[in-house]
Length: 191
Image (cartoon, rainbow, N blue to C red; front, side, top):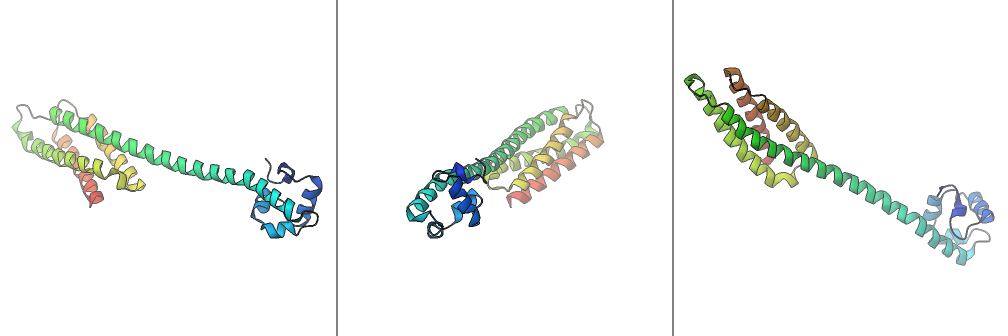
């Protein structure tokens, strides 16, 4: 229905539309907002038709307002639900990657990497604990914080995925730093 075409409303024909337009009522919204008493005072409308017109406008106009409100809410809810799913997915991926990375980084026969491996393993344990705590807090976190965590977790996940079979000192230190950064972020969000 066109907002300017008042004849789409029950009990309004071309003649009443002209009277309404002359009175400054040119849209269905204005017709909806005008008080019943003012509408009744317009020439040839009267109390009876004013009530009939107001009822017809309410039937037409209010459902469209509800649809807009419902659509807006459902869009927001969908975005939040998507962020929650993405966060949960990142948590699951990180838990798997931490386990895989610890296996790949074992310094088989190379004692010089043992302290670095232990550091990464300890930081990984702390990260897993923080991820578990995050799962419990997930609903209480703001959308921006969730997005930030997802982004950081994705970066760490990619770094862990790229760990090769022959790790070097740089690999251990880089992973250790990345894990530490994410753990710190998670600690700050849970505080």
